[in-house]
Amino acid sequence: MKTILTLVLGLLLAAPLAAQETKPECPNRPAKVARAKNKARKWFDKGEKLSKEARFEDSLDAFLCSLKMKGHENTVFNIAQISKLIDNKHSTLRRLRQFREQNPNANSSAEIDKLISELEEELGEGPPEPVVNEALFAEDEPEPEPEEPAPSKIDRRTVSYVLLGSAGATLVVSAALQVAAGVNKNKAADATEWNVFSDKRDKMKSYQTGALIGFIVTGALAGAGLYLLLTDDRETESDDENEVTMALVPAPAGIMLKGSF
Image (tube, rainbow, N blue to C red; front, side, top):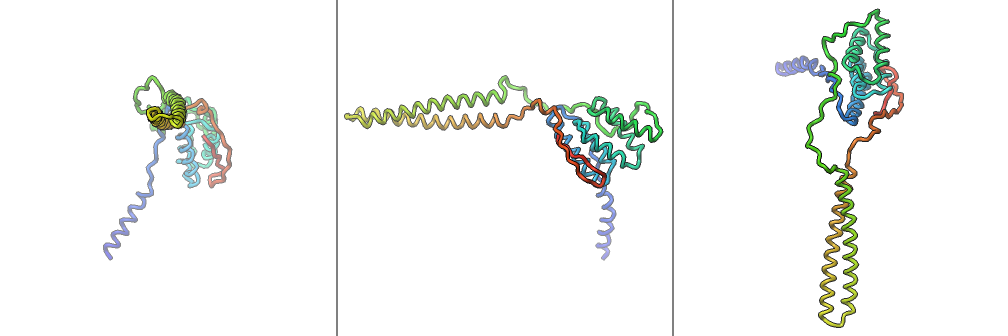
């Protein structure tokens, strides 16, 4: 009985500690556009989840982090909605000010400035001195990409084109060998002397073997070329554009606007 009481007491004491979640810090914005979009999407989804749990301050931080990664009008909308739901307006104002001070060139700066002005007017506060005692966000500098080996003179796509071209060449050679094998087969069938028959038969077998090897090489070259071409993940100019999908989703925190990045 004493052992059971000890275990129960231990669980009760451990429960509050387990309930406390470590608040993740907003990372630096990646230099690559595709990675920045991916991080923006993840923090946006996190903000929605936290808002549904009525954790509005954490939700605001998540939406601001998403905005830092990539500007999106739906993100700005949600920031405005969450700002109205937080009881501690001074905390909200502090978060918005810190975001602007640490991300001066972020997208949607004008909208965030408007929210700050509205809160300052509501609270009767003027703009503070530009001093930040603590940082909710990392400095708005692109995070360094992992070091990669020096690029070769021929890139991935060029190699794929070379492989596909080589596959086409070997296909032509293989087809020619196959035709030559057929010609020698016919000559062997028409031969009236053993020496002629034996010679044409041997040539036919050699051509057939060469054609078979050629077809195998053609398949290997074509497969490798197509693989390199289809798995080429180079970024395109379209990555710089916002792809906005409007979808109103009812939530305890109000109407949340989903978005695609």
